[in-house]
Length: 455
Image 1 (cartoon, one colour):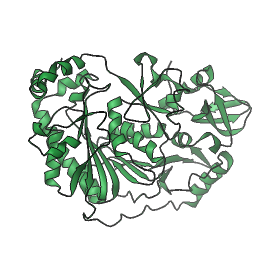
Image 2 (tube, one colour):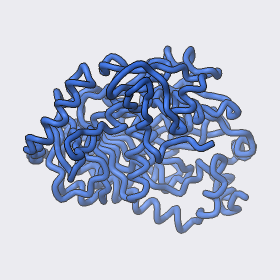
Image 3 (cartoon, one colour):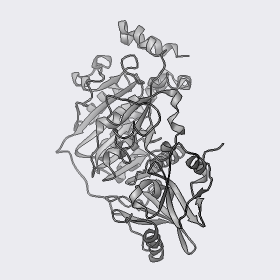
């Protein structure tokens, strides 16, 4: 049940528009997914999946699907061709629109929908830092980056203040999808109603300003910052934007580029400046999506800047690197170490993205692309490495149709048949889905046990 105090406030804010808003909350919600540009084009996805897709207007990668089609159960979901994401949530990364080669920070990143959206637009080039302060959520974030084949991301588990101390003026673009009261998710997640209160709204607004000010410290002169929420609260939306503009005079609001699809902000709700009209509100009774808010800032080009952080220290274990290169010679046609820096964490070998920095002293959930594990006299490749590569990057592969019994068995942990020998990529419709090791006509399954589909 929707909180009565919430409804009363929305009625006072919306006036004559309130009945339409209230009716919209009773309608069925929209379902969306986003093509992973690291693996497939938006034009290529609809013809590959066995269910209808309809484009989302404000995100070139986005599509609506029907709830009954259950795309999360399809093998191509496990191959990372798409990410299931609420359509309105696609707006934030579309507004920030990072380019290949940039340094980008997603400051409040879990579970990874917006991070993977940013990664797709970066096309594997540049440095993407995904930060999540809650450890369990950081682990989920890392898993989603792995599934979508993101190779240029580092996952941190840090407080925004500590991160600002380490990386002042470092990033070209920053996304702050701030923790909020979640009013825009009431239709999607009725449990969110139980946690709502006017006191929580005020607490969220205070926390949002702190996070935003830390983000500003990490933004380079001339850099851009997107602030987004999934709430209707003026205190957390226009109010937080107004507070940041007052606290950080080097920041200015600029047009989001998506105003044609959404409604403008309401400066009158917070006694704010007219420029708050440049922010956008997404109303569920006006578009096919949940409630969201977004603002785009730009930092003054003459703001102060800072020195570069220290570079990462590369792995000096010659035996470890030789073991990995021997595996690559036998199993791959590419060199995963052509870009980036190899680092060793215990027995695990990773590649820190090109342009990365020394991670010492930071809480790290994923230092980069996981290459694999060094075991006695051998190297075992990581699942992440398989999903970060393309079909032609493997010397050996075995392809199985996504609608066939073979790939379904593989995802449950079963073996497959192939007249091959050695490490190979198991493909589904031409897309890597996991490692196998073939011998004697049998492909032994190396799909991670924790990801296997039961039943």
